[in-house]
Length: 336
Image 1 (tube, rainbow, N blue to C red):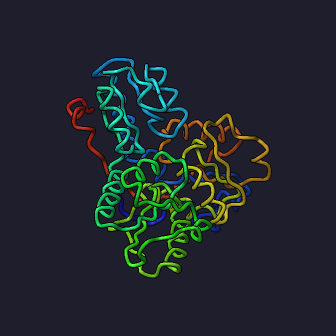
Image 2: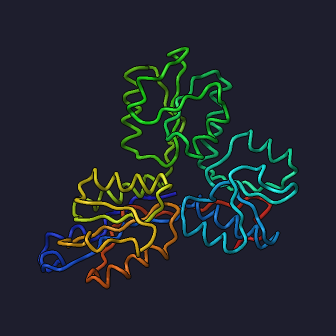
Image 3: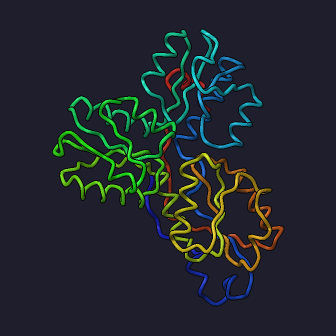
C-alpha cells in the first residue's frame, strides 16, 4: 500500500551552506505523496470507462470526487451530475461516487430500474462493512465525521439505529449509549488524524471500554499527505494546498500545515487563485494537493510560482504509494 522512506533533501538543506534560503533566494518544497489516491483514480477511471462503454450521457450521483476541475471536465464530456437517483431517467446508467451510498440509495435505484455502477472507494466500503458487522452484534457505533458529508451519510445509512455521529471533540459530551461495554468508534476516511485521535481520547474518557475499529479507518492516502505536510510545514513561510473547498481531506491539509508550524496556509483550486500579496516577504513555499486533485493543477501552481522567482523546487518525500484498486467488475475488461 505505502512504505515509509527517508525524507528527501530539501528540508535538510535549508540550514546548510549553499541552500536557497541561505543565499537569500526563494524555493518551493513539494510534498510527496500528494494528489490522486487509489480510490480517486479508480472512481474517475470508472466514469471514463462507463462513457466509453455506454456513451453519453452518463449520470453520476453527487460529485464523483470533490474536485471542481475533475467535475467540470467530465461534465464537458457528457456526464450529468445529480443529487438523487430520482433525477435519473428510468433505465439509465448511474455511477455512485467514491464516497459511497446508503442501502436506501441502492433500493431507490433498483426501483427505477437504473443500471448502477458503484465507484465507492474500497476503503470506504470497508467502513460500511464494519458498521453492518457491529450493528448485527448490537453495538452502539460512534461515527467520527463531519455532518452532511456524503461518506458519513452513506456509512450511517448502513445502520441508522446504531450509529451516532460525533462531529469532533466538542460533540463528545452530547453522546449517549445504551451499554457502555458495547461501544465502538469508526471514522470518516478523510479526517485529520490528530483531531480524530483527540476525539477518540475524549470518548474513551467517557466510555473506558470503547473499542477501536478492527483496522485503521482513516485512509492511508489521507495519512500520508498529512505526514508530508507536517514534515515540511515548520520550514515554510507559506503552504499552498491545491484542492476544492468541499474536499474534506484538502481542507484538513490546510489545518495540518498551520498546526505544524507553517506561518500561513491557503487552499486554491487553480493557480489563478493565488494572491500575489501572499508572496510578500516569503522565501519558502510548501506545495501539496488533496487526494482528489489531478497533477496538472499542481503543475499550474508551480509554473505560476516560477514566474514569481520560485524556480527552485525541492521534493519532500515521506512515503511511496503503490496501491491500485481494480475497476468495478462490469468495467474491468476496458481498463487501460
